Image (cartoon, rainbow, N blue to C red):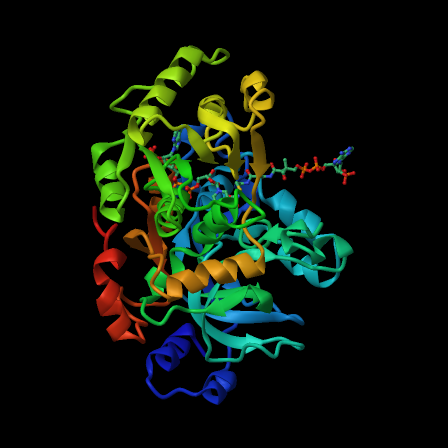
Length: 447
Ligand SMILES: C/C=C/C(=O)SCCNC(=O)CCNC(=O)[C@H](O)C(C)(C)COP(=O)(O)OP(=O)(O)OC[C@H]1O[C@@H](n2cnc3c(N)ncnc32)[C@H](O)[C@@H]1OP(=O)(O)O
Ligand SMILES: NC(=O)C1=CN([C@@H]2O[C@H](COP(=O)(O)OP(=O)(O)OC[C@H]3O[C@@H](n4cnc5c(N)ncnc54)[C@H](OP(=O)(O)O)[C@@H]3O)[C@@H](O)[C@H]2O)C=CC1
């Protein structure tokens, strides 16, 4: 039995759930990994010079055992997220520590503590098997998976599952991720695949779309409302391309920050009008490694006022971190919110606290999304209200290059990876709906 038989079943028009359930599973499959004995390979190099193409491998790996509440999924396509960049450059720490810690929690979790880490936190594919206790999903279901893995044995996570003490990001803090031909997920990560999208389009939004939804729209995040001025860093990037769409769809006013005229054009094509090219306008928020330049914060704020007719920012959608955080706090209006989910340029932030407390601003930490938030975000994709921002698609063999592109900020929107899908464009089940949205679906393609 090989993965080829699985692919044939997926591509045949008439395979039933019983057919999928009867398919023997292969003993091994191909997966993108990093290796535990290579975690020091970039020691002494600058972050920028750590090259994911050197640390990312395509290996044959044994199929993991399926446990209660879990599902094995045939992965047709996945996407590159920045967390896989972090994993591949072993920053801010090696992810093998997460796997070891998870492995210590219980007998079944020991499966995750291996000398290789199968990475990837998005997938679109087909359920092959479900474990004991799974009733909501069955073999043959076409699905996408969000990346929240929880145990929920403590009371702490029962208001908001992101607060579970055993909350982990699948394919980053757990093994058996989505950049592979088969993935192991908890069944409460599964969601229906949007019918009007191809496999690679459906796999693209997942992680970033759910994160942007919680961070910007959900009451657990900034709770954006109509008319809000929303400053969006990296507005044509992974997170930002969804934050921009949420702002526009929710009647807010995105102020998009990008670093090239090409990226500015993409934001314009999404419907944004207020756009700042940070490169062209040459903002230098830091005079040197230790010292910020408040005059530059002010120049940035003046530019925002020009674009908004004199108004300041209600919500900052933060993720660059150290480089921008001081400016983000400064340009927020009295009573406004800075919501942050990352620190790409450095996690030791510095800002002038007088502008925070005297103007009653709030900083909200946000991380991924709970199942409900991920479901709502996926529903908006399925209804054609929010669209994938897939720009380029790589083969599984070329995942290292795909991660390199994201690490070096050479990409737009999202970068896809074909896993079992032999080519792009497969898996569309609703051509009529697709036709209605085709321009928006293709907006980021090959720009
Ligand atoms: C969806 C996609 C998301 C993304 O892309 S996010 C971007 C990528 N992610 C990252 O960059 C984050 C990577 N993760 C990390 O850097 C680390 O993961 C954290 C900094 C988040 C946490 O560090 P750690 O060392 O794992 O955790 P500790 O909480 O510092 O635990 C170490 C020990 O410190 C104890 N401790 C925790 N809080 C306290 C406290 N308040 N007072 C005293 N001790 C404390 C703990 O219990 C534990 O102890 P004991 O080692 O004995 O188990
Ligand atoms: N906590 C969570 O749940 C999540 C956290 N993340 C984290 O968020 C970060 C961004 O992820 P993602 O959007 O997918 O990544 P992308 O690289 O796709 O997009 C980020 C964009 O941010 C902009 N940017 C990068 N560096 C700077 C800088 N120094 N100053 C200003 N802008 C900058 C760039 O746009 P431009 O050059 O056009 O300005 C870039 O395109 C990563 O660190 C990731 O790990 C991501 C998802 C979930």
